[in-house]
Image 1 (tube, one colour):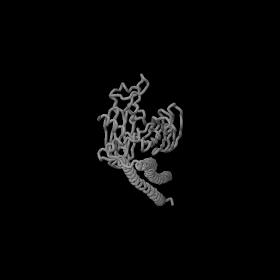
Image 2 (cartoon, helix red, strand yellow; image 1 turned 90 degrees about the horizontal axis):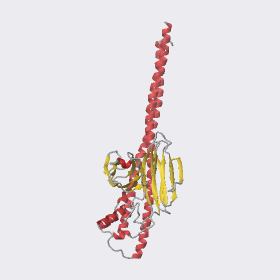
Image 3 (cartoon, chains in turn yellow, cyan; image 1 turned 120 degrees about the vertical axis):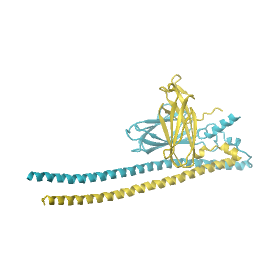
Image 4 (cartoon, chains in turn yellow, brown; image 1 turned 45 degrees about the vertical axis):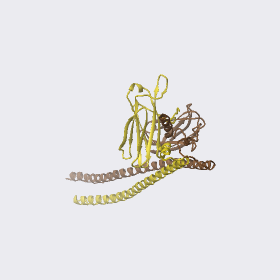
Length: 206
Length: 224
């Protein structure tokens, strides 16, 4: 059963380069990331499949920029985390090559696949554990999908509320600052006039 | 035996990329959000099969000007689409076999980083479906096979629509993120420039008074 699992999206990464992706997710959501690396071989002018000794360092930060996962994986890796706070999580990858010679002048090709929420469920496992028939399994999958959509909607509602608060706060500040500036201008003008008048009077010019 | 199960399970977990559960839907999608530094170009590649379709939708979520260059080229190197300084775009490509390359270019900007979101929707990716795979893992028997077909069709229908909902949600989320970033930078700008304005006013008024006074000080000395 030879399957080309990651026949999907890939990109190139330099030796010390760090590539980061942002995932905006609701809380209590599981995220599974899988990557596969290939190294460019100058001799054959193609990308070699798996290169041992070439690892990737994965670092995941939560919305408060606190690091929730920081681990070294091999040339093929799989990382998982579950969000505890809703918001923008950052997934960063950079290569940690132990053999610099391999990299010299070459590029590393990284195939990446990130799955969020309902897509992380392992249905054969669920079928086996709960002893479901095929129909039940499909219904369960639909339920999971709908649940994920609902979670996303709730998160969006919370985000929209914060957005509205920021907008209203900005509007208010613009209004108050304008009024304050006008008042200050008038007060400063009056002060200037008064001060200069008393100054000229003191100097017996008027 | 265990290796076979593991192999099969790992196929299942990557269901986005290898649709073994093909009976449900053949649409695959993935989305990514990343920061494109100023003056840089980032390229991504997607392996496609013949006669599939690739839809790419991108948006600039943050970064002064909210614009980026974008182009997509076929496996043979042909430039298929090219956008110059757009803030969002959608392109659909009927694909041939090979790796398609699409790039985001922020070279025209020297200071501002762009936050870019893109979504790939792939259709008709699998040419060899196997619709009954889940039967191997499910337990029990289903009676009334003919009714079952109808139910299965409805379920597939619902699943396809739900996936569409998820895609739309993803896009809406990107729009909201962009608007939110815009608002937050407005807020910061308002605060900053108000304080600057206030300081300038104070300084200028004090300076004016001082200058006027100093003019008259000199004259006074001249008279005596």
